[in-house]
Length: 456
Ligand code: SF4
Image 1 (cartoon, helix red, strand yellow):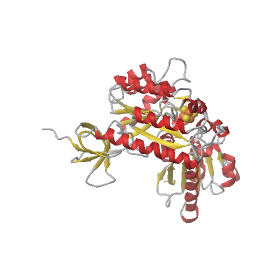
Image 2 (cartoon, rainbow, N blue to C red):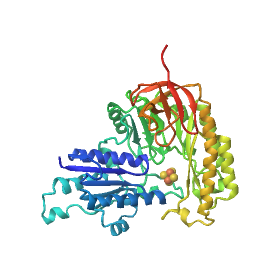
Image 3 (cartoon, rainbow, N blue to C red):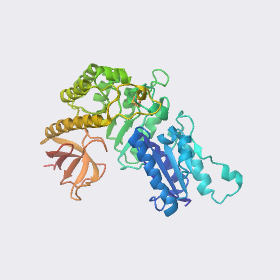
Image 4 (cartoon, helix red, strand yellow):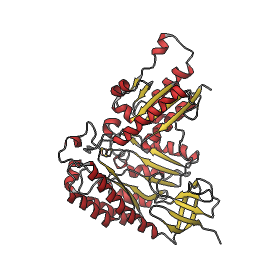
């Protein structure tokens, strides 16, 4: 064995997929995964989306750097979005980091591992100089998609990253700076990856991208869109649930909703970041739709997809958010009763148009508005879940509950992992990855309690 490696994956599920590719690369090189204390190489896959995420990435790097003095770590690698965004600055300020890898350069970890670990006995000057410290290229291409994955989460649930990058002009968002223009993978390669995941035991497949509804728009005309992809993935027999995240509100056309409703494995769930509903604010955010359009889209979706669960996010405190705009948002939430809602406070990001905009909102005020949104949502969620008491639901079992070893924990079709609540399952000896029928006996703000249905 060439050595031991430890990975820390920060940020969103798209980063998780990248980490899983790097884990597979390391395994192929003969490295095995170990704790940070035991590892010869530590890789931190960073997030650079908003200020708190950047801070968490830097804190994690500094924490991991301690293992170079106190543990066995010889190489510390910083990968992902933050590395991509500020390579020179970070290289100057973080001498403890041996290598920086960009978002489209994950495959270059291979070379670092080959030359630094497997080839550590080679000491000639040429070998030592072979791997540069900063390996950050332009965020383009899809080379990393060619690498296999080694899942880091539960073996029965996995993300499928269907495209990389984003072509939208949202004024507040730094993602296109870090991830580049949209590059979609073709349908056959995604189906192949889904089949491999299914054969390995994956039962729930979650489609992710910066904007899943734009999938295929960069490919030859007519060759692929989200509806066509869903039809193809629905044929993968090992899968039981397919769910879609990050749909753009103005891009969900009736044929897409019809396709979702008609497919056996596609669950009635849609994650659709709305960000706001005040028209002036949406104009400033460059979202390209109005509040009315969003309402219509939700109404049409609910009509076309029975029992649909919707998740969304709102961006609070963007420059220009007035009291009236905030009230409008609260009224929308009250009226539309979205099932799951998250809210995050605006973070002024370098290189984005929003940072230049006047009428900034005081951070304390933005936090209070965010709290107000979340309190309202808590009531909506509590009422929504109470409606399920007495009903029979399908539960995908994730494993033993964090709350009690006598309970299992799982999710129903309306709950995506990590972001939504869960179902606590009593009277069940099901295994992780099983889907069982259960009767809901109790509910709280975000979670349900259910008892496994016993056949008569
Ligand atoms: S669609 Fe999402 S990822 Fe793309 S620019 Fe807008 S907010 Fe950013």
